[in-house]
Image (cartoon, rainbow, N blue to C red; front, side, top):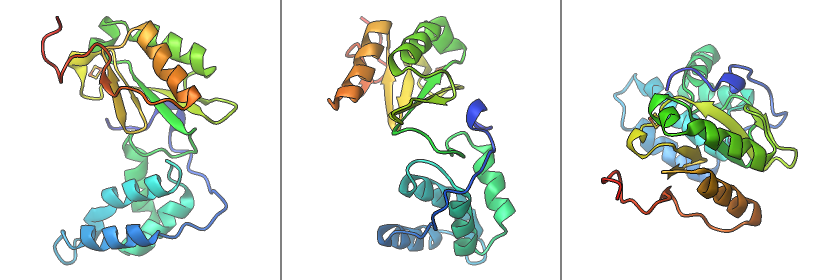
Length: 196
Ligand code: FES
């Protein structure tokens, strides 16, 4: 989990637009900060990074860092350190659909290489690349915690598990065509119950 996506690493950049919290996020921030002891408000940096990323088209710009630092009254470098450490924070712009392919041993043994090839072919993206139409960014990541249902990928906030080449292509096709996808196991397994 630690360390950023290989291709998204630590290259913070400016979006060129001021980042100000939305009204909803200002309310959420008040609530989040109230959960920490007085004087320890800076501990809220991770949930605030998450909110900023959500509001800022799924990436953390330098403007986001500055706003978080101001909100929590902490040095910008401290916010930057946290944002660059965890792979769930995207430190450069990503496409509409961030496709994270698990490449760790359990998924690899179950064929994650084939899933990667299929995704790269269908999205016309290399690993760590964004498609020309900005629809997809494709990255490889380490274990996402659904090993018993590998091979698996995460697209934005959703897991897709028990994949093969055919089901992977279908998922990408559905996204391209604006059709809904079935989230979770693509073989109808509930949770991680035994495969039939
Ligand atoms: S190894 Fe792929 S989810 Fe754990």
